[in-house]
Image (cartoon, rainbow, N blue to C red; front, side):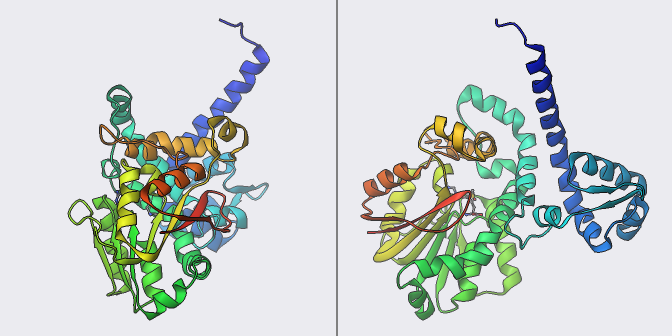
Length: 357
Ligand SMILES: C[S@@+](CC[C@H](N)C(=O)[O-])C[C@H]1O[C@@H](n2cnc3c(N)ncnc32)[C@H](O)[C@@H]1O
């Protein structure tokens, strides 16, 4: 056993204490979101705990302690001398503005949703078998939907479809499209609104995700979208789709090669597969040294993605950072895809691959 360096110990305690504080902050931030505290702070401008509580009809003592914690963790500003609190525009963008690309509230939702999974995860380390998406309950699907909402609502139709040669015209004329692992259905909804002559199917193996997708779809009144669970209705074995999309699905499905094979089989000869998956380096060492959010992504992996990928006894368990570009090239080539292009789409978290037969 090496001897303890007291200075390093002090630093480590400080760093770890910050992480314990961040763990509590997860629950407290979700409360701020659910109770509308961040939005109200923005509407009111600098205000006292009394004013904020009165605005939302909440108990002042609870709101005051929430504000103290939020100021200490740095998500809310304390206006010295005035005993008031405020939210900066940057904090508002990250914590409350669902239409901002920096919005991160879904991350807190997802993180909080996995806390109750700890007992099952402890068992998973012993048995090797993880949890399906549905084993987490509804909040996990909700968090993931919120995390990826900006891309689907603002970038898919405007930026991504134009990068797929001829696809805008095909979709405008009427094409058949599938989004596999559709989660809350936001991708099919965005595409179906933009291309009313086309028909869309959202597939997901999670009933929680499908329930969210159905609710989201109902709000739109769209009639050109169908949702289904591939356990009941698998992807067709004949090539019927002009476009298939997957958004962060391949790395966390238990049988990624099977799914890629199925996508190949269901795609028309001149069809295209747009595959979004996590951007990472080829080795753990490079992720450790160079990936800006490796800790967050490995955190997601143990609790959600690898957990899902190992939810069956023979699952692949690729993990959040496990479907690297070389791996994607290899596995898709094995399925028969001959065209593979890394699209020039700026995104700190994901790569976009365009595949054809
Ligand atoms: C990380 S979530 C992404 C959801 C959605 N695409 C998004 O971006 O918000 C992955 C989703 O893929 C689904 N999934 C995993 N394997 C699948 C499979 N073989 N077929 C269909 N859905 C699958 C999961 O249930 C989960 O909802």
